[in-house]
Length: 518
Ligand SMILES: Nc1nc2c(c(=O)[nH]1)N[C@H]1C(S)=C(S)[C@@H](COP(=O)(O)O)O[C@H]1N2
Ligand SMILES: [Mo]
Image (cartoon, rainbow, N blue to C red; front, side, top):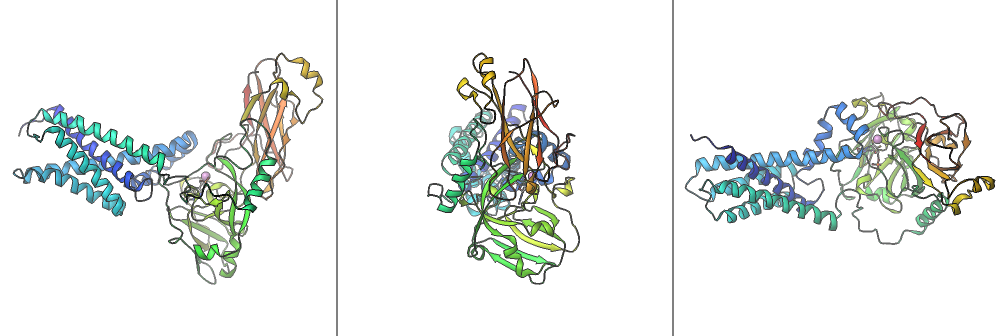
């Protein structure tokens, strides 16, 4: 047996990786970021199988970057596995069938087809993956001039395969991103251009009118709603396939179809969500106008006989909490006047007022009433995120005011300070404050590191029991760097605790502060 040169070996690895990449790209071309994408199971397993400590680090330290990393790790791992199978099949076929020239490429492509079918369980996805690899093999063989026997051509083949795989993937992913919004947030229903129903439009207009007029401050209804998913490729159950089963410690087990829910009386609710795993001044806190039905309308007939509930979802997520919280809950099928987007749990998700985001289960499929407490997905990983949210005031925006803006609404008496500066100099700080169903009564700002405090101006609250408020404060800065601190008092009159705590395990707490240079 001749020893293979390093170059030849590298060449074969390159061809195998290129084949893996071509298969992943081919599948993506066919089905996009849907659950049928060949990389979906591996990408989703990266979070579920990763050690809890690593996941916690990724969530708290990396944020959205963490979920993108999980996704791309899954893609890379899939390409590696598929490429390995491709190379192995070709090696085996090469030993057995030296006389038949097509046996080797056919074996490689067929093996990829089998793996793709096993991973995706989807014909379209399998055809896409297989076509990707077949195309790559064909191009590489053509480039070779059909003379794979010559050792020198091994490297040419590798370079060619690599180039084709990279160029093809860039094209496929770029094209999908640009023209086919099948993944993530893109609604998918194509109803984005239809006018909003009047009742929703009116409510959204009222919310806009209540939003503070502050540069770069997110309006009361979020422009961009954060997302937290255990699955980097979220499920995509159709309305026809979806159902919600209510079972466990109930007098009567019930199953609702989407049509059943659709036929019920719908309500609109403004509601804020916040993730227990976000940083103290993070952005995983947002508000939307949700449309749906009160959970009690679905549970009424069930006759609840347990004190706890487990919600389960199509992505394998599950969370448990006391039934007391469930009775105020809502089943949302719409968001800001549109069908609930896939990324936020289409076709239906739970909203549990005042509680951390995690029990607001998306892609909801089951409500199981329990006699005894149980442990949810994140609690198994050490989090305590099933309870009510902590109070927080975020400092998101820091603006320098021009001289025209200097007359601020909350301090008309700034005549003296108006002449004090040289070309503006006034500073505006703003953000959002949230305390779940306790509501926000007051936000105070200190510009001297917490020595003295003044009230910030608050936006009028949105209608609803579980909504944030915006705050803004304008001031003439002192000389030099100074520390701005913000703190909120909830609707029960309780000032949020000053003590700083990390997100893990019970959610961040403390007063947000920022050093500002005038
Ligand atoms: N099925 C399912 N529901 C879920 C999650 C999930 O990963 N899967 N994430 C939870 C977490 S941790 C949060 S903070 C909220 C976020 O909701 P959003 O993605 O719509 O902002 O959804 C919760 N519901
Ligand atoms: Mo969360």
